[in-house]
Image 1: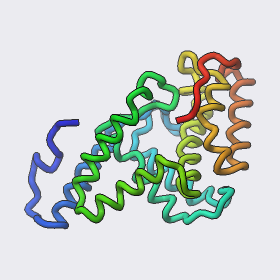
Image 2 (image 1 turned 90 degrees about the vertical axis):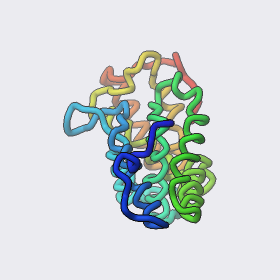
Image 3 (image 1 turned 180 degrees about the vertical axis):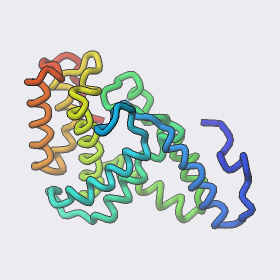
Image 4 (image 1 turned 60 degrees about the vertical axis):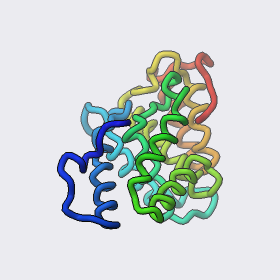
Length: 217
């Protein structure tokens, strides 16, 4: 969190607003190094945050028709592209890792302050507002963005024949609790998630039962 900015290794010969923007864009290259718990469907390696953000943006474009409330697709794409940038400093918090979830809010707030503060003041406010909107889930766009964010890793779990569903203590009820946001934004996608949970349980990829159930984040 306190390490020097990437641009400090080789300072740009560019000053002013453009220099700030380019320094930010160099810094967010770190997103490509943040590994998530989910493995890719195509090969056996872990997904990184940049790949995850790209996949979410594409999912919004493809699945927007299933939003239960009208959404601005472009704005929803901005939300999913921005929301994980804080993990550059805060690290990824896997959906089924209860230990890391304990201080997730504090870590991510501190990361947001530092990262978005690299931008010119007007863009810093804009990006922070997008991040805050996603976290608050008070708009149709934010609710759908959160639903997509919860659906994507579970699709990868299905393709991995379990993946993070096999985290100790995770059961079908845990997954239902952690993915409730999907059905709140889209009945159709909520039904799809329920089908994944049911199929995974029948296939033995996900434990049945109530052990370890906690609410959504």
